[in-house]
Image 1 (tube, rainbow, N blue to C red):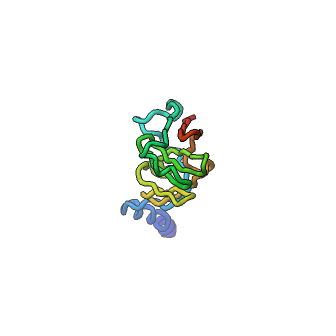
Image 2: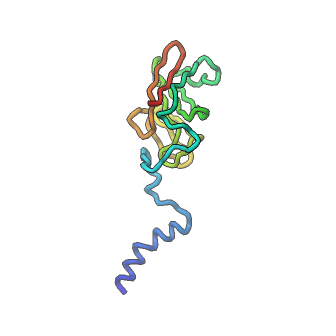
Image 3: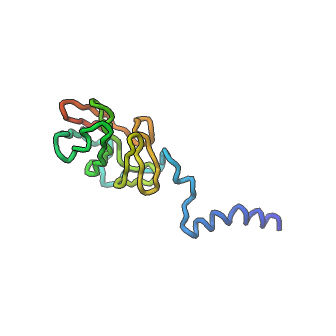
Length: 145
């Protein structure tokens, strides 16, 4: 009888949560790095991508003219953020939590994925993959190595 009670105390909560479709709460922590995430089969591997050259004079990049400006450049799977007059950072826009790419917000120092409201720093030491960039004469070059 005691073993049955112990079993029910430990097993019932996960079973009820799984039955109701409620994910385990630990899966929604911030700055989480997913070891099992793999790039989509249609996108080339980061190591295979050639450097990307972006002319910021193009009107579609007008959000990057001011410090603190940012853009979710979904065509190239990048989050771009203007850090200073001479620095723009580029991150893979794949959320480390669930892999979503299309719904991001930026508050001046952190990106927030709008699917589960996980936040990620705009520093290259956070959970988002950060790519090397050079910025000169309004030309941004992103290197994927």
